[in-house]
Amino acid sequence: MLKEIEAKVTAGYSFAFEAALSGKPYAQHITDWKKLGYHITLRSLHEP
Image 1: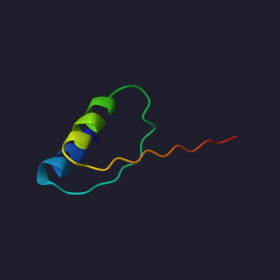
Image 2: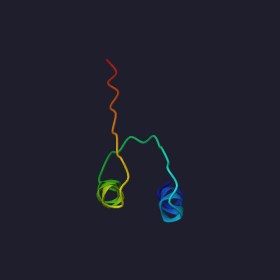
Image 3: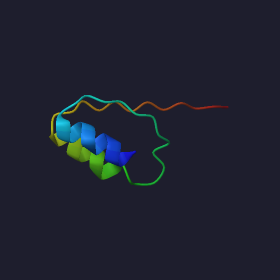
């Protein structure tokens, strides 16, 4: 999925994705995207 997202970023497109965000693979990317001017919104769903 990160390759697809990076292609969108390189092209300057807006995008949305859904992921568990477990681990750190997205952490640095999110920081980089923010520096590029992307608005980041993280939403968390909690199931009982």
